[in-house]
Amino acid sequence: MGRPAAPVRTHRSTSPWLFLLPGLAVVAAFSLYPFVSTVYQAFTDTRTLTDGRWVGLENFRTMMADDQFWIALRNSLLYVALVVPCTVLLPLLLALLVHRRIPGITFFRAAFYTPVVASVVVVSLIWSWMLDDRGLVNAILEVFGAGPVAFLGDQWLLLFSAMALTVWKGLGYYMVIYLAALANVPEELHEAAAVDGAGAFRRFRHVTVPAIRSTMVLVGALSSVAAFKVFSEVYLLAGPSGGPAGEDTTLVMLVQRVGTGLNGRVGYASAISLVIFVIALLLMLLVLRADRRGER
Image 1 (cartoon, rainbow, N blue to C red):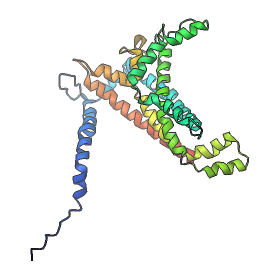
Image 2 (tube, helix red, strand yellow):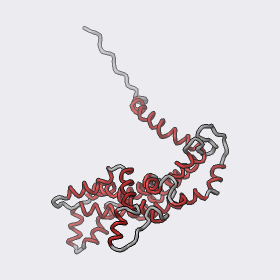
Image 3 (cartoon, one colour):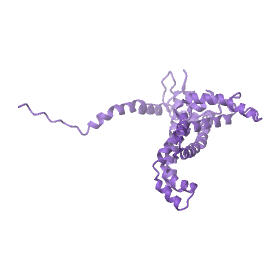
Image 4 (tube, rainbow, N blue to C red):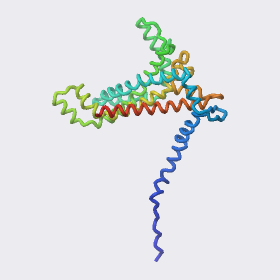
């Protein structure tokens, strides 16, 4: 008879880490290390081609005296204040509309989702052509006797146009999230409310909204961070200069402007990036805190 097979030895304490090691290595290399490096460089005067020395809070003192930083902060916060309510409510109304089981509704779902899969660069270029002085929108306005509107030449009109583009492009994405949540709302609750005489608005307020509250919080958190870190829409509509006199610059655009180039101020750009991270984290915490108060 042959020798019995040797028992398989298991290392319960180390085996899970061996499976997690490749993923942890990727996260450490592409997420953790860049974050730690950015935090360190925020306290140095590092430039693109030269290593920096430790300067402490000098970059943050420079930031407080930088008028361009306050303009960018104003625009980013205004973006959050106006875009987030739209991206929380409008996709919900759109989801309620396409949630109905009627013939051909699949086509409308796909049509509303199309802007999501389209490239933000292509979409922004199309919008810039439409909003140009000789574009489609102004051509339609002239038909009705209105003069050409400088959508891309006025500080506030340009910023509001970028906000409209952000909302329009995100409608389909958040609509799909709401559709998944609406599918889990028990139909019996709507039927019971209808039997009690509740109309469509009351059923929406007292049945639908409480059932999808957690999803609304998720959408609010995601859209808050995305709106605060907006870059592509404003950059492509306003140009690298940030619109007229740089008045439409956002914080991420400011990071790109001061931190790139042969003489880019990487340390100062890292300090602004750290501020963006802290404010974005605070926005998420505020959304979660508001949700907890709403549940009481």
